[in-house]
Image (cartoon, rainbow, N blue to C red; front, side):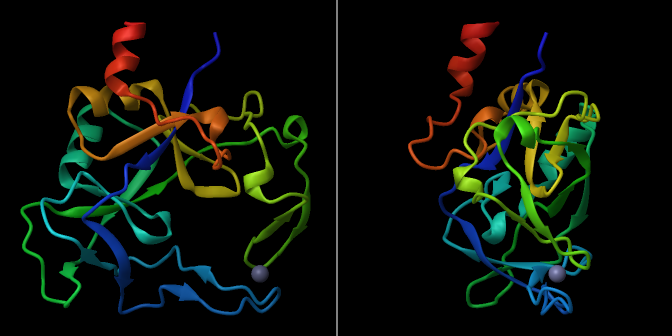
Amino acid sequence: MDMEFYCVGSDGGNPYVPLMVSSNDIDLDNCPECGRTRYNKQNRDLSLVIEGRGKLPDYLPCVRSLSVVSQRVIDVWQKYDITGYTAFPINKLLDKHRNEVHQDSQYYNVTITGRMELDFERMGVAIEYQCSTCGTIEYNRKPWEFGSAFIKEGSHDGTDLFAAKHFEMAPICTRKMLEIVYNEKLTNFQFKHFETKFIYINSPPPIDLKAFFKKTK
Ligand SMILES: [Zn+2]
């Protein structure tokens, strides 16, 4: 039986994070080889500016698609032995006037460590250039022109949370994650079928978890 995989995202909305602040470099400027600016993945000193009022959701929508989740999410993932990620605590949550937001919950930046590879051959995607210094890649097509996504057979390392090689910021998960989010009522998570990972225009609506579990259980 084929494993079913899903893309994980936040449902968007308010409050959200339009900006991050740090005492370190948030971006590393001007790669000496290709000149590109890229996100500093080693930075562990991160505070987030919050826009909007109200209770923060468990999955906090964040600029640049950073995965930011509440203490409750981390606790639940530990309880169910979710594998394939590391997390470091966000320093502070600031409102847009830079006063500290008082929250009961600690928030975390999640780094996806689980891996799989896309079946580029089946997808008709080719790497045309890869920077040997920063790893930036150019493809023969833009990602929004990739069409349906396929997994290279045998490339998934068995983790619950994982990302495709070259697309390390975008979490993918197994069905177990959908069950946990639904059963534990974690807020603001959104899932879509893995095949539609690169379908942005006229994409099918996100999975309705209530209907999903009623139908298949
Ligand atoms: Zn480079």
